[in-house]
Length: 94
Image 1: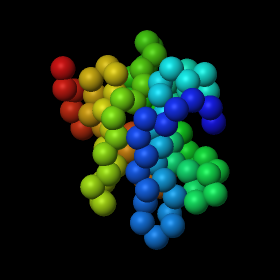
Image 2: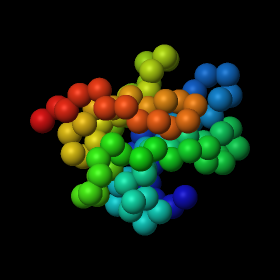
Image 3: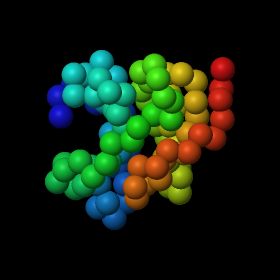
Image 4: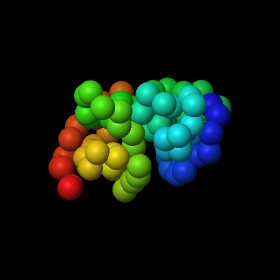
């Protein structure tokens, strides 16, 4: 992966990390700039923003020890399943 990591959440028990890459990085121009990697840095999944049509990306990520949530450029606050990257819209924040 190229491009700067904006935020990193390290998961407990050597479960890897959640990485939020700069949305301008070439490797994530498709908006899938939120990903989970294992302890060796292998990508386990890349989450897709909840919008269709115009390009969107993730802008903020938060892990409270139980739930992973993320905000998007198009003003969605979403939950992200830690195991399979399924994105569920929780709120439209605009």
